[in-house]
Length: 340
Image 1 (cartoon, one colour):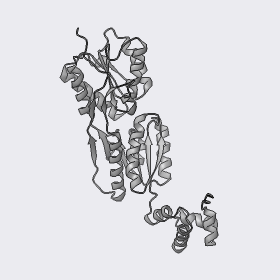
Image 2 (cartoon, rainbow, N blue to C red):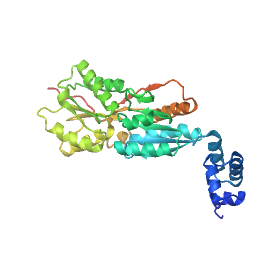
Image 3 (cartoon, rainbow, N blue to C red):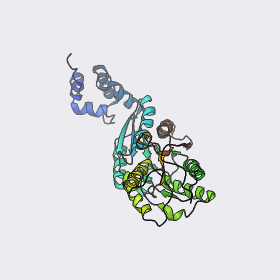
Image 4 (cartoon, helix red, strand yellow):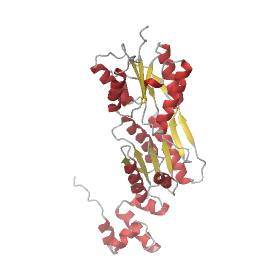
């Protein structure tokens, strides 16, 4: 069966008898083209199949039907879950997403935001992005609606969707305390992140309430990466009194921690228990079997997309914050503490 030839801009120009530049400007919705000429071009484009529905709808509604989504690290399995949630909602609304990976780098984020805004996206979803920069704040206070996921800052009055960090960490610490663990280590995320600071504050508060020992001396400032877990293992191995349990604020750092502890001849969980946070797919495979706090990442992405589409339709809608619950998933990396 022959492949159908794709209809091009030149085909539309040939069909209308107009100059290629006129057709291009008309389909871009530029004001220099007379309204009757633009309507004629759009109708012709629809008739011959040149992205007919998208072009016509965009011009009539003065919208691009594209949503910009910024993620911190495309290699982090959590990112894909958030994005899938956003996509679930925006695709049903007839929109597409334009994805930008910033690698946690502020300059890359600023450049990506400028690029997406220049492409006239209807709105932005920022997943764990920098917010305490004047350039970022200026763009987020502009005409393009935005919703935040996981990170927020008091200076920006924007729609936000996140997880119940305090509740999840409290539940996990209560669980390991019941197993007899009193010396519990904690690997933070990057402390420039509001969610990482919230998690650390929640850990300290819950640990104090439970009477855990020497909390601050057992905190390691890390990142949400596998490599951070490897590095943290070296830190804990060098302590005169090692923790009996280590809590990582991200599953990837927990997995890195387990690998390096195992390489050093320690058994998880017999010698040391490990708890993660995220519940990525890797956490549940038998070889890892990580006890962790489940974040409803796909649901968070979907909630954020719904808030953004509402904001696009109604710019004056009240600012909304949604916090989704977490759940402790007990697997094989935690066990009773050895007495003594």
